[in-house]
Picture (cartoon, rainbow, N blue to C red):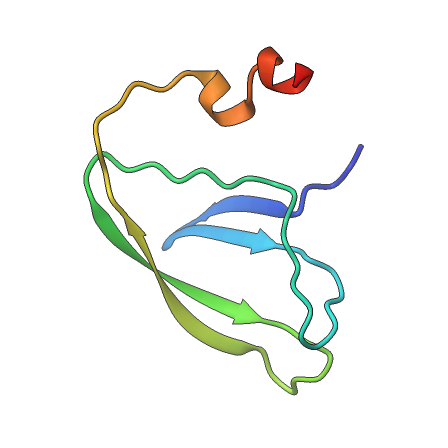
Length: 90
């Protein structure tokens, strides 16, 4: 079984999301193959504290990111998120 890049766990303060991208060289870009879906029922700004770990850093770097979610009303199906059979055939 393949271990996912992204893991989510509840904590007393909310959620802990870990994205494991392995070793990344300076100036490289790494993108997770996993998808993280976040849902809210009204427009919201969610502050997120992130920690960046590196062999080249004596301590992890802590930063705060702001996740801005704009809500609009629309019906979704499972295929909107995971793709449909028609998408696979093309």
